[in-house]
View 1 (cartoon, rainbow, N blue to C red):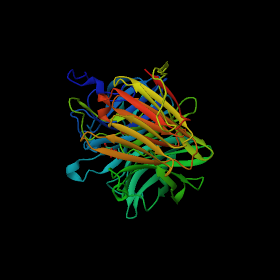
View 2 (tube, rainbow, N blue to C red):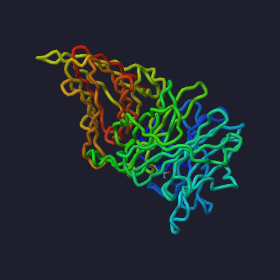
View 3 (cartoon, protein in one colour):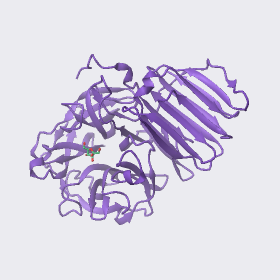
View 4 (cartoon, rainbow, N blue to C red):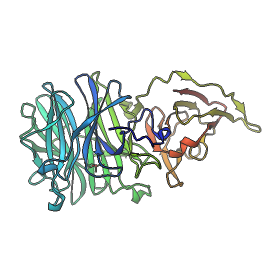
Amino acid sequence: MTLNKTDKTYLRPIYHFTSEKNWINDPNGFSYYKGQYHLFYQYNPLGTSWGNMSWGHAVSDDLLTWIHLPLAMVQDKPYDIGGVFSGSAIELDDKHLIYYTGVGDPQNSGEQKQCGAVSTDGLHYEKIDQNPLLSGLNHQAHNIDFRDPKVWLVGDKLYMAVATKDQKGGKINIYRTEKATPFSGFQWFGTLQNPDMGFMWECPDYFELEGEHIVYFSAMGVGKKLGMDQDHLVYIGRLMNDTLAGTQEVTALSLMDYGTDFYAPQSMVTPDGRRIVIGWLRMAEPFEGCHWTGMMTLPREVTLSEGKIQYSPIVPDTSRMLDIAPMSILEGDKKRHRIYPYSPTKFYDIHITDRIEASLDLVFGDEAVIQVTNSDKQLRLSRKGMDGNATIYTAPVEGATELNLRLLVDRSVVELFINDGTKVISAIAEGLCNVTSFSVTGSEYFDIEVKCL
Ligand code: FRU
């Protein structure tokens, strides 16, 4: 793959993963194998819109800078001729095992079945002869909508969560087999659902954190009812039982990211035991003058503190502190105001703390505006979209008397981590590339640190 010379390069984020060209969606096979992080992703080798689903592939030493590798898998078998859909990867016995959804011939119902592939070098991936491994038929699942296997190992067992649906709505089925036979013998083990959460669930994930049982999924058909600009949204919830066996409800559901570009996240565990999640930030089409569509979030470490899930972004060492703007007190009240020069070709890590005595405004022209008001305990991020219209995303700032915001701005995208990442809003905002300064206005107590690369 080569970069398209006519691309407006200043729109391409520096630290958010993008493909060299063409369309990407879900992160796939996010894993660590033979000393490197592997990120696969849904990819259209032939164009800038969704189609011809294949697995793109990249590797990284630090989760921030990625090396693009040749495509890992394309649609070339009868069982995946309709698409090599999303899935996951694990390391087992020195091999990299891939589990993905093969979509059959769309002329012939396009059934979705779980399939496998193997690599011994992290570069070449061979689909296995036993494919397909599991169909929805007779396995408590829908026979067509049955996709996105997420696998993990516990002791001598291998578990696989698969997204599907029934007449009550979306659900996750859990299958189990022996670690010794990782590509055969999958039996239904449990079902996780919640009847109020849309007609189909996609891209499930499950893990234990500090004894809590955490589930997330991308729910189809929930957003419009809530007046959101996207109908399919990502929810994170918990399980009350400490076993996945049988049928149980996912409870305590909340949005995983309050910005609706976020979709189809996937997690992995690093060699030093950290749980890291990365998600897709969806774009309907490329920016004008560009030939790539969609990007990934920065990887986020997931932790649990006093029962609350927190996300902290993996960020580059933004060592150059920017502090050239003097703080000024606005006339007539005690508000403090600061203006910073802004270069759209840099990466900014902006950290603000405040006691929320009054309100806080962070303004990048009219392209992206962040406002927190103490009166209704809401934080609003307004971003201007490609159509020129502003969309406002709102996240609750639960009864806090203190506020800390971490805002990462990477050319055409912002990610906002609120109160130690207990809430996150991320959004693509192309217009940021025209901004030349940003300002912060807050109470007399606010403090700000700006790092820039
Ligand atoms: C989610 C999704 C998955 C599917 C993939 C196809 O965005 O619809 O359910 O596997 O994308 O590209």
